[in-house]
Image (cartoon, rainbow, N blue to C red; front, side):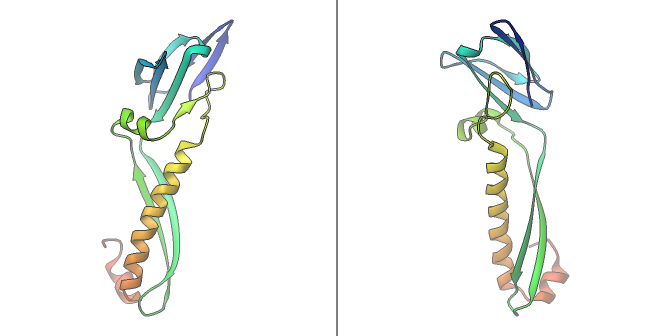
Length: 141
């Protein structure tokens, strides 16, 4: 998360090397890059910060197999933003110019979306497999 310090009417942003910063002013992209550190005026700045390291989402599913046995599946989805500009166009990663915290929780939205995708695929597999197949085949399907 960005660290923002106050110096009179100016603010100073310092971000971590694993964060990609997009700085907009007057509707145009002024700065972009990893681990930026710079002064800005808060009234004319729009700043987005995206994590570019790998993030993980965990999920747990309890469902029945084809032979009506209850199975519990634990999973982990790992994701990384390969194209930060495209991700920022699709999801709001705006940070508050005074605190450096997200205005809306974008990482929670992404985590929920990926968990739902993985849950749906896992449930489709479980309803078509027996408990023996699910145990012996493992995570491949």
